[in-house]
Image (cartoon, rainbow, N blue to C red; front, side, top):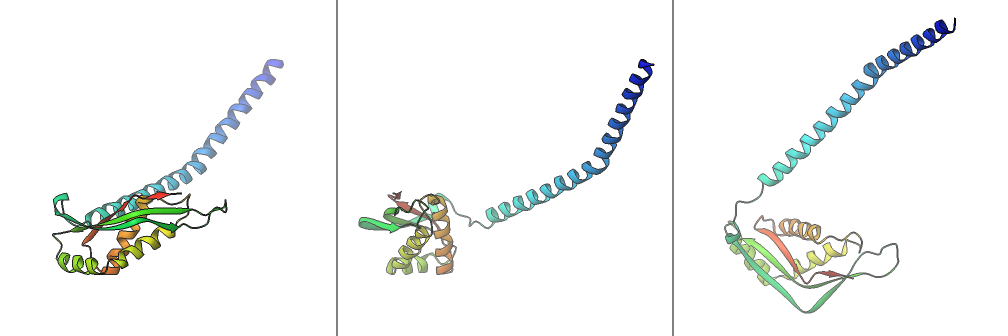
Length: 170
């Protein structure tokens, strides 16, 4: 009799395992497939945006780049946003170098405009740096945002990069 009860318990456990496996296959797997498809779609959209950003880049080489340099006699001190520690933090800047695509149609106009009124370039870079806090500032982001703002300000794609001379945070 003990063997029959043990056989019945094993048979019941096997049936429960079979039922739970069927539930897993028919209820959980479709949800996982939908989630996987959603992740694939989002990844493909991100890839498309990255490709579009690269395709919009102007056709120029390093030899086509010309620069305009703005140098400060003493390091410029820019206040950063307050952080949780309550301490004042600063960014120090020795100068700015604006890189132009000399093959652009509006190069001469933009170069002349910036050369005569470089104060706007300085203001945009200072404002961009001041938007960050000590823990969140990233030189690459500051440079990219500054280039975007300069392109919008002067309505041109001629400005392709800026460099920050002596950029330090404290």
